[in-house]
Length: 449
Image 1 (tube, rainbow, N blue to C red):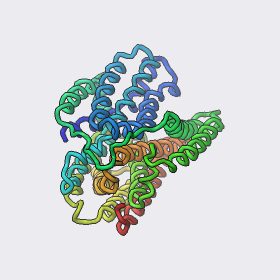
Image 2 (cartoon, helix red, strand yellow; image 1 turned 90 degrees about the horizontal axis):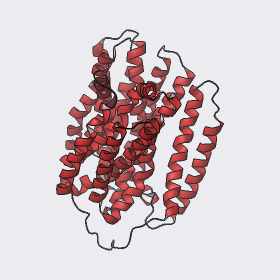
Image 3 (cartoon, one colour; image 1 turned 180 degrees about the vertical axis):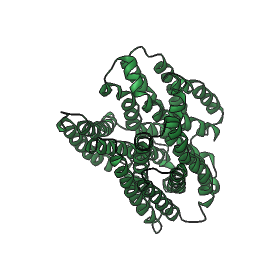
Image 4 (cartoon, rainbow, N blue to C red; image 1 turned 60 degrees about the vertical axis):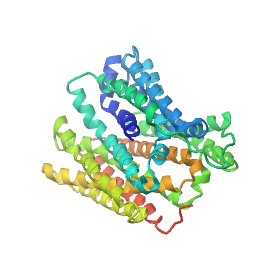
């Protein structure tokens, strides 16, 4: 479990560390912001499009092999990114980092399932959820601390020794795939399936991102974004129709036919969209509207991950005592309440008023995530554990991408620094959290399979 947690913490934290350093990177390479944003986009796209294919490979050759391959590639690509001589080389290295991260995240949950006995699986998933949620929201604060004393290169420096340590420990400790009766047949997917899967996610991501950029930049045209988004949806329809006719589809439409699994996925996408909307909006609100320094804002924002770390183990102990759907619904209700209370902050709030609201958000999200992940993992047949594990990461990245694009659109509508866009973002985040809670509550009476 140490291996699983350590590897997951490294890749999830890395996914958000460089966001704060983009202006510095742009100045260092004398590049435009529209080019520099690909330092982030390359990582996200590579991770998103390869989660499901690598999970399918893990079902065939072994989950531990995919995990170790991903961690090795992630560490080597991090080293390449540190010494990248040009922006193009940095973007390429970030793409390879994303590929390595996909190897780790695609099989993470299934390795937890194989590590813990069923009676303790909720506890293991609580540790996992705590790391994912904590690392996701801690990225900006960690980056601010490092950038205050060192260059952006140091944001990537720890990836190499920690990656190598995880690789060494993982080769000794990670479990092998179980032998499932009747599941010895070859588990393959065609090249066309792979290309369609990659094209679907890439076109939808780029199209939605281009629409957000067009709203932000003067003179930007939404036509290119609309065309890419439309093409992505068309490819997606073709891809999913092909997948629906396969016994072991690359995109797990077979799992989405399980009502409780589908509801859990919908809950996860909406919850991570809400979290991303709020946590990207809060730094702008604290820095530009309330006048805090970067250090003060970073310290205030730590209330969110601190609450996650505190509540996640408690949520793990509640799994099995109460229905997962009920716990998730209550968690999202608490989360939505915290978000709306943040939106109602006065013009000059005291620090404690900000802190307890952020802590309420973190506590609600922690109460939701572990039970939600537990339902996803346990409702997946053992032979399809890899696909179920990959869908956890797919839902998280999809929700985070959607949240970032919505926030970019809100900033385009209200480009000033009066806090209007941030407040609207917090209200919208509360609505997404409420949708997630509703989907979670609907699972209470649903069968697992």
